[in-house]
Image (tube, rainbow, N blue to C red; front, side, top):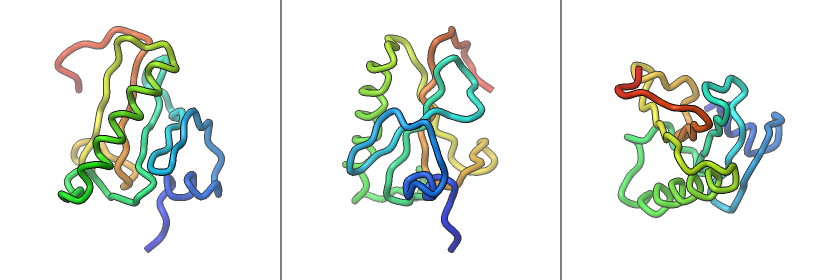
Length: 112
């Protein structure tokens, strides 16, 4: 199986503007931002999409949300949106689970 774009970023084969990293997660600025702050938070473990996560991934999923909070605070965001696209029909274009942290402007509901 070919490594995804995000696996290449984790391996430092492709440059990224990394804003946070720990042993389980990586956060970097989106190259096509949809808000003044648009950061992707990914697990280092390759999960194709959220629905592929199993019971043994519960701790990792919690860790991803903790990383979102940590990065949002470091970016000075009190209000922000977190989006997970699950599958091509939902807008997922890189098939490695990732959370979009969006902030710096008002958002409307419903999205999309």
